[in-house]
Length: 156
Length: 284
Image 1 (cartoon, rainbow over the protein chains, first blue to last red):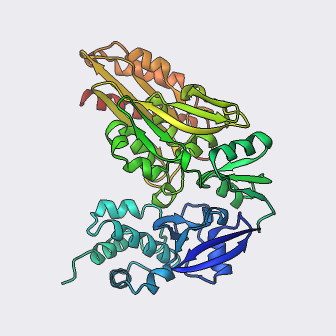
Image 2: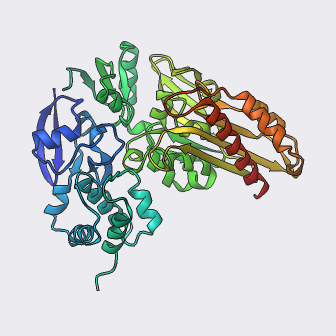
Image 3: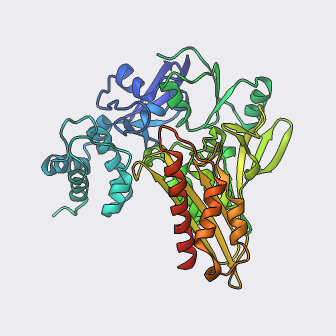
């Protein structure tokens, strides 16, 4: 077991944890942050995407041992900020029909949020590229891309 | 869930190398995008992990006039967005952009990719095409090896048990040249290659010279297609006999049937990618 100090959704925590514990398991089981979903567990599907120091990562492939001093943001953390851009993204996903079963949706919201932070008006190609690792088996991708495009439109 | 394992977070590269020297069975971990998959599959056999991620000494890209030197812990994303790499080594940028997707590219490192030594990895063909050299470091010192001599066989490399990959150096490509990279997988994004091909074709006084052509997933290691390059070297572009050149390429690779593809398909696609490389040379 090792002792780590890290920030989870803006809250500093000190934890004692086995170093190879997956960030995904730590979030869901230790922190009870179940917004982050497990899909494949092999880094292929993107359902477990969270931000580490502002960058999207698949939390199933990040061992806790590497997170001392890191800042982790989950889908719950985006909401807590009360970010109007996030509200628009979530509403756009609903309006465009970009969510069905919902397993992939938190990962898509986290990835799209990071994209919109980096590029205020991403092109379709940039949206496709950013979301290439977030696999959806329900809606297909057209509605999801459309939702991200709408969320990026200037507020009237 | 996880079995007890020792975890060392070194204070410095020197400290990391001392651990490597003292305990040859220690497993270094960089971004974890390969090792954590093994863990998920129950195949990670490591009692002691050495965490390289905090080692700033292995990060950063130095773009000198004559060469680009890339720290082994450089992530694919850092590689793909670095202005000097984008300008000088577009085939490597393309490889980095096609290695997993964004979330993988933020963790996966170039050094980790080389140490993992998968014959189907995306960046090695581009590194071979650019004539990369690797710096291997240990408590015994530092040595540079040609990347073309690094892979000894399937998952076997020239890295000694106490060594770490520190840096990857790419010479500045000479003058006008065609840079080519294409990978074919089951899906455009986030798929492991069935075949990939990288090529660098410098043109001088209307003739090709120092052509380097490399393929992934067609042999036990990533390979240079030396005979095909030898055929192209010294020729003017209109003199290239495509049928003959393609036949040389298809004869010098050794693809296999496996779960991702068949030998027949891989040889055929390798030939097709080679012709696309020739197209790119012609239309440059």
